Length: 261
Image (cartoon, rainbow, N blue to C red; front, side):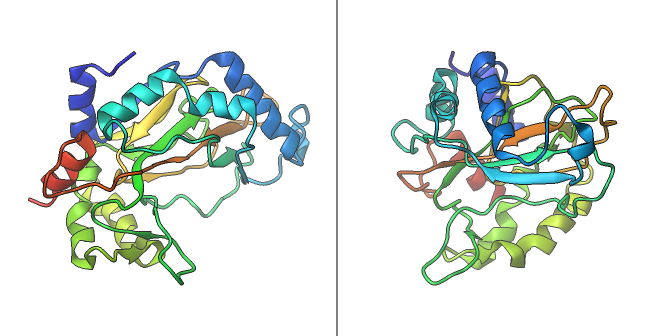
């Protein structure tokens, strides 16, 4: 199902769109089961949930490939980034599993994700044309409500970021060099922007502008009662054709150009 004109307009204004039920529940349940098999924690024993967050790479297995290839997502990629301009994934990249431990994870600052590794560099960079990255995607691999560590989003912040990246030119900037600036943007410059929580059902996918300022948060549930760990995949949609800000033709390009004016 293609995005409506209203959904595309909302994406350009807010920097994200949620595709509800993008991936079928059976596929998502298979993905989550395989992730549990890779974790030391026991899904049936909350006493083994001692760390606030675990990170692992998505397996390259059929359930994850099916999720990555969901028809509703492919159609949305064409609409937001441009047909033929993005690379098809066979997995879902980095997965963050957040447990209801009540302890600090020290990773909840406001940020955007970096996208490319320059020759000789050890850390990833970002530049004003979002080199290599077309979208950030948030795949909900478990049900997520307000207490289940939903990602926090500063709606509209994608329009604030381009002017902070522009001074670094095409070469871009090390993501950690920019981290303090972005955290400040999240806490101050965009503080008056609406905060949205990426909540929903397993199989929902949030397609986010690559410059959307967002932040993790602690899982606030109580282990062993209602709360369950939150599973979230955070892949990038990588580009096969780079954005052209002088001739913007897609919603992502248009909003970057708008943020520079």
